[in-house]
Length: 219
Ligand SMILES: [Zn+2]
Image (cartoon, rainbow, N blue to C red; front, side, top):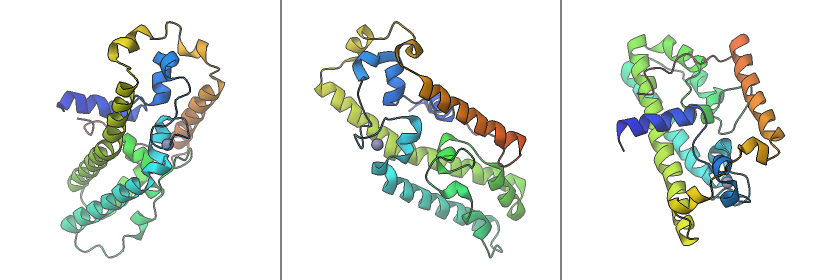
């Protein structure tokens, strides 16, 4: 994949706009109406669901554990004197769920680097190495979740659509001509968006976990 495509995908992750089924309903409601998550077949496939779906849980646990292993080995490389990693390992970022009040592993998948993480690393290694560690960790999470979860899911959907005779051309003829918000009762979705904004606002106002940086990390 070209670097511009990788960058575009990272930005879409950051703003939660990867083409999930729920996202596709906004453009092709007639086609995807009633479709559920292609992995579990039970829940609506929203952005958060992709990463919290029960069917992906064991894979995500593996990716999370490998991320921790990689992080610890990098830290050891830069500072072999660290004896107690508990401050790092007890952070909420290692939980695989979504939480409006705390950054979780799903936020790391989006590309967010919580301040609480950089603050801890800052105690142990110099800033230059800290940046290298963050970039490597972020890239690792991106590659693993993209390859193991998202690409697999997309291949499955592609095959499934082909079996139903759904082609690109057919999709275009079924594109919604009215805005999605007029078609669906979107109260729930609006509520969700406000919740998400509130949580970011709270994090910024009350300084719990401010997103310290993300520029340079998307390229
Ligand atoms: Zn699912």
